[in-house]
Image (cartoon, rainbow, N blue to C red; front, side):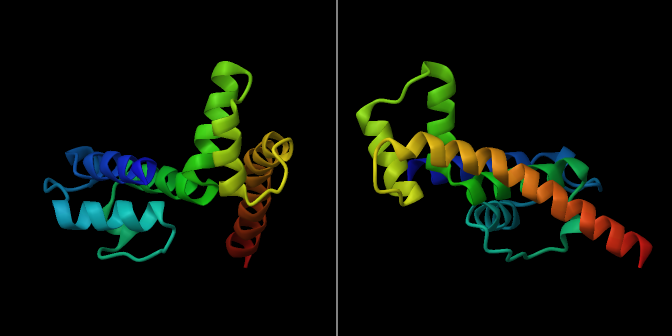
Amino acid sequence: MVGFAAAIAVGTALLMLPLATPGPDHAGLPEASFTATSAVCVTGLVVVDTPTHWSGFGQVVILVLIQLGGLGIMAFASVLGVLVSRRMGLRARLTAAAETKTLGLGDVRAVVTKVVKGSPVSEAIIALLLTLRLGLG
């Protein structure tokens, strides 16, 4: 819960920066916090038109929040823990097992690694197919 709250708070702060909107006005707290919460929770709800209201920086912030929410904050934290410590403690394995719905503690690292590696690959393939279809169609 703290991880989601932290991601939403950081996302809200970044979306309230003047750099996040193309015009001279910056986003207010309600629209920035709603957008950040919706992105992290991957609901897709918006209160403003994303392509016109947010600058490239704001859109990247939203994309990163969607990625964090989609992969799961706990899976992301587990991967960072593995990279930093090169081994996971029992508590981290149990938390990651609960997040990834795996049965065995030994499966956690493999599942998290496959998700983190497989997600960008599948997203890139789908993005390429959509670009070809929409760009040429």
